[in-house]
Each structure stands twice: as C-alpha cells, then as structure tokens.
Image (cartoon, rainbow, N blue to C red; front, side, top):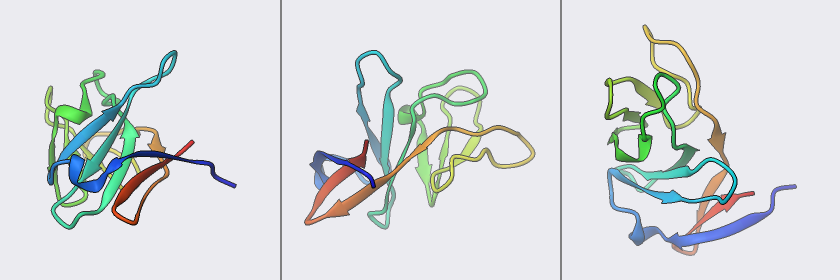
Length: 103
C-alpha cells in the first residue's frame, strides 16, 4: 500500500516543466508536467553524468537532459536508445487538482 504526500496544486508546475521535491538526506525528485497535464516523477539525476533532469526539456512523455541531450522516458525512467541506462521512477498522481507523490 502506498502512502501519499501532497506536493502542490497541479497549476504550480508549469506545462512542459517541472518542480523539484527536496528530500533531506536523500536524492531530489523531479515532478514533470507535460502538455497533456500528465504528471511523472523521476530521480532528478540523469544516469549519464548526473545532470539535473528538472532543468531539461519536456516533450511528449520524455525529458531531454540539459547537459548532453540524453532522452529519458517519463513513464518508466528508461533512457531512449541508442543510449542505455535507467533513472529511478516514483509513483505520482493528480487528485482534485492536487499533485500527490507516493512515499
């Protein structure tokens, strides 16, 4: 069973943008919002060189790392071929216009 933590209203995350959830003593989480108002949550570190994915470009259901242009799938955290790797994914949902993160 997943416990949920309220993060913010959906409108606080810009379309095609993100919001960072800071976790003391743990890695940050980036919550992304695409053009269709879908939300996704990934570890805020590209598996290639650790670039901040929260500063990347959101397009469709992918984010492009701002450092070296790697594309990461927002749904599963997998790097798009020909590159290889994976970024940790977190449960996230929108209910009543509020974004909730699975903890």
